[in-house]
Each structure stands twice: as structure tokens, then as C-alpha cells.
Length: 354
Image (cartoon, rainbow, N blue to C red; front, side):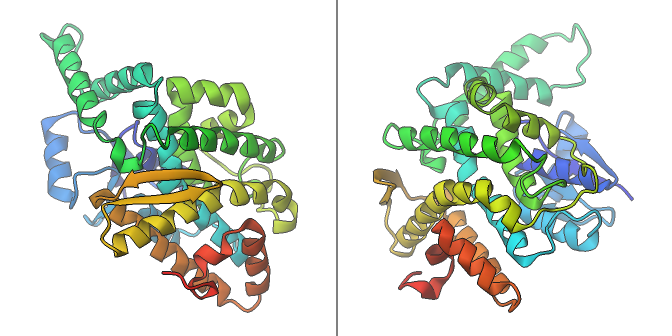
């Protein structure tokens, strides 16, 4: 029973889903849209022209990496990709959401919009053009010209879309500092364990590694990672085809908190602050928003692509509420979230919030 997984090697969400399939040992075939037949199959199956798109053995089309993984996790719970302990299970989901919504800014910014991104943009555009023409026979007439045109066209489309991640001259210092700070914190955390929550990958690993593996492959972000966070680089490579290590146990929060809590305090809290401001701006039908992140002003336009962030915040709040409804876990989770500075953004009745 084979799943057909349409993806792209340059899509963090595609790599996230592919790594999950590999870890689970789910039978699948990886497909890129490099032929008229595959383009037609994808177009018929996909509701939106995005990857990953998974066609299940019974012909259903699944899109959006988080719902894909959550659905498959229910159908195939072994080996587990979510800690059984509710506290850790929620933190894993929270880190995945952070990765999808904020970690993507690191990748997109360094690849396309930073003051140093010209080599990254050129390298990536060419790589994706080659992927979409993969399988071409040597000596195919006009092949190099096609590659040049495809790479140029792809770069032209992407270089005008910095607003989708809020990247600008104003926000660049915040995004770049966030990336380096995250690497520094994760380097300490991953020095002594193969994955974020212990000896097996979690949903949080799949989400965060999807973004950071792209950074690892790119010119500028990859150099920063290799220079400042070699253990993070090894983890990003490991997550391409992950497997449990040793007995494959998840650790306890007591064992993880010393080095994982700083990541929540530093990075996830900033993400939630920004996410709430985006949701508030959308609710007020504002075209622009400004929020102060650790004393620095972030300003961006608010347009169609940001609508997903409000949906994302609503969903992670629901997951938090569900986790806090577990009487055996509520106290420990609330304590951890308060210590991280995330509680007030996730529990809507903690303040007068959205």
C-alpha cells in the first residue's frame, strides 16, 4: 500500500513530511513534478498548488504538513513521534508550530531577502530548476537555456515576496539575531542527545529540522550553522532519515528543561508575541502592524498570507487547552509555560486577549 508524496527538496514542509514517512517506515514514493504526467497527476489531486501533497493508497489527497502528520500518527502510532507525557507532547507540538510559522522566516530571509542573499538565491534557483528538469538525457537540445530561464523566472517571483514572511530592512536584524540565538541555544541542548526530546525524534523535531535542514543546505545560513552550531548541523542531517537511538526513550521534562526551557523563553515566546499581534491586526482589519519584540520594533504589512497565522494561533491554543484539561499534567504544564513566558499567549483567559 504505497503513498505517493509530491514534494520538493527545497521545501521545508516537504522534507518534514518525507522524513516522517522514513521514520515511520511507511511505504511511499517521492515524486517531483518533472514530467507532464506527474504535473497532470498533481494538478488533479491538489486542492491548492502547494507541496507536500500526499495521495493515500485509497486515493485521498492530503495537504498541509501538520495535518498530514497528525492524521498519519493516529493511523500509525508506532514508532511514536509524540511523547506520551502530555507536557512534552504539547511542547513538541508547540515547537513544530513555531518552526512552521517563525522558523520559516530564517530560511526564507537568508535564502532570498537578506543583504547577503544573492549567492543563496542564485544557488537555490538553479537547484530547483535542475530538480524540475531531472531525468533529462545528456545532450538534450536547449537544456541549459531552459535551466537558465527557469532559474531566472523562479528567482524573479520569489524576490518580490519578502512581505509574506515580514522580511525587510526594518525586521532583518531581528530575524538574523533570532536565527543565531536559536542556533546557540540548540547547540547546547543537542550536545548531549540526538533529538530534541531524547533518543527518538518527535513531531517538534520534524517541524524544526524541516526549516533548519534548508538553512544547512544554503550558503549563508549554512555557514553560520556549521560555524556556530556543529551539533545542530549533525542533527539536521540526522533528521533527513531519522531513527531511534538505543532504547529510543523520550526524556523527562526534568532532564530536558535546563537547556530546552531557554529556547522556549527566547524564541518561542517571541514567536507567540508576534503571532498574537498579527492576529489582532487581522481582527482589526489593519493593513500594517507594529509590535515590540524584546525592546526592538517589528513592523510589517498585514495581507492575505498572514491569515494563516491567526488560524495557527487559534489551533495551538486549542491544543494547549486540551493538554491543560488533563488533571495529571495541568500543573506541570502550566508551570513550564509560565517559566517560559508563553503561558499568557496560549491561555486566552490569563489576560484580556484574543
